Image 1 (spheres, rainbow over the protein chains, first blue to last red):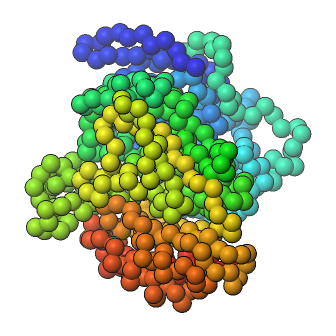
Image 2: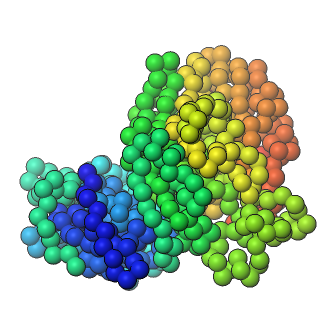
Image 3: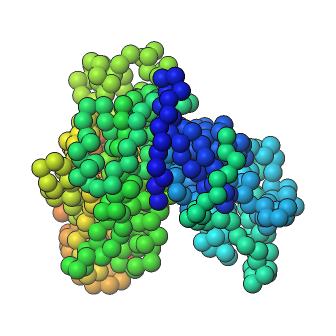
Length: 192
Length: 327
């Protein structure tokens, strides 16, 4: 689904008005074609949970879910993200309750400096959405594009295992999961 | 690192995409390589034409003839996940999983990996480094920093899928203003590190097609890289062979061996394939095959590992591939 792009001028810069569906809400943003999704999430919409690490697709700190798939938002253009569901770390908690992955990372102590954590959790989220009961090797494979320079990988893998186990115990009573589809009739949000 | 300013146009058909081509325009598929090189100011096109919204470029499906058709904008994850569910294509899925990292495979496409620009440790660097060294052959200068006095560019073709696809005998269908043409995948490559892709600037890769595999076909792709979770290949060996029966002891009846990341283009080593014909593959054959592959390698000191090490590793990769084919 594509939204009409209205062009306006701010000095010599051409801005496109686009709608981005982030964490189940629609946000209006005025962007240039060459702005990455990461920069628009952080600088325009205030979703600073997506981190800017290497900014060239090597570290995974900027990982978000795009239509339920983990991607590096530093290598996606904002204008390419229209009409797609975007989930950032801010969108995982529901009604004030942390996602089981977030709780598990907290409980296990899978966080050191915390910079890689949002990307780690979102890569793990994408894994559990497709494979609710992954093996340790599958967890390591799914997280292999996310670098932790504190090198705390053992506890991160433990946390994903714990979240998967809790999830399978709670199967059937699982709360509504993250918004994986863009709302077809969005309400205008409070984007800047 | 911000991207240089450009105009983005999302093409909705192959014809539209080709018609938008022109000076200063580049095609954007997954973007996992092009956007990085734009951030490094290696490329600064005035316009990017997005290919992801073209329905014709998507999808993986078996053909009526029993082959496999892969749309160029299919992500590498989509290819791997599909192929791993179908036993006779699962080895192709395994090979696809050796490309890059899971996150980059989720965005990077089959066509983008095939048309990947060549890489060199003097070229894939931020502008400040390149300015210090001066423009090389690939950047329009007249010097090669990797091989002094060389008049040709030694940048390395670093795609992963070309080797496996060439070993399977795949063809590529290319669209341009004059219509479509189909060519063997190996003809997508010029062999010139500076201009590695044989497509014209107004042509796009539409799909690749693999023929029906012969009975008892086996395949292995062995890849050398520093970090198994993410890196480009430093050397790659693909081995595809048909056999006269199942299990151990079956004889090879037709074989193709491809070397990739050994120079500016992936190369089918016909002599090596011929040597294996009629043989029962065993690890010991690696010693006979490796010299034929080494003769085709053009490794120089412009990657993350030394040329000598990469050349030495050819025999190791061949041995691993033969072991995988033993059945």
